[in-house]
Image (cartoon, rainbow, N blue to C red; front, side):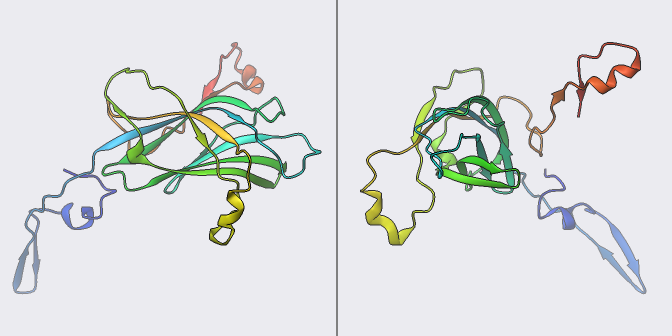
Length: 206
């Protein structure tokens, strides 16, 4: 079985169809194709240490951005503008076996409403993370962040760094329930403007 997102769907959706064209009869036989097993990639961005801004004289507005393929999610900006930011937010992606994509984690600083500065980056293969089918606890891990801007020509300068920023993450692949084709992007928010309905609303679902 498969879904409309599969490449083979365009030739498989009209299986066992017969078409008459002039004096000829065309018969399309069924085509069997397999759908990849999907998992939720759950990324819990907890905290970071030794996050140094490009401009040491300004206060940080740090957040975490995670990207897997075309899926990009961000945490909120840490309310405490310090070099040891804390978020403890979940970012959930949809991953497909055999997990050929990588997870890119960047720690960024909001230096301007229209400009973000990357302070550190790390690339993680999905095969690094544990799979779970129940509520098995997953332990968090510290990952060293590569200082943004170092390239192949600057390999010698990496050894000059006495320390590096690091981030604490809790990541796993959840497969104990039905996985939707799209990531979990719904959220519940509060809006005072909806009080016109005559009831005290707790929130609404976008």
